[in-house]
Length: 103
Image (cartoon, rainbow, N blue to C red; front, side, top):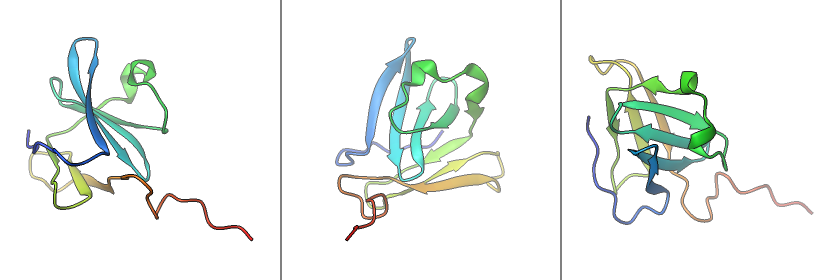
């Protein structure tokens, strides 16, 4: 599994789920949880506690590509690197997630 240590990214944190380390990444499309011991991940609605995510929701992944220099991240789903998911971390006052201004 590939992952870099993110020191400045407010959108990434680590938590404990039943003894396994879980990486929590906030994105514009939802909250991503990565169980690093089991190489599984899931995407949940913002505010979801990963303890309440059903076991069938967790899917396998091969690698997680994160960088301090780029808000984008990629989840590699197969050994060939042909299938994957891409999203952007949502940090602070994200202009992509902000509700539109209303008159």
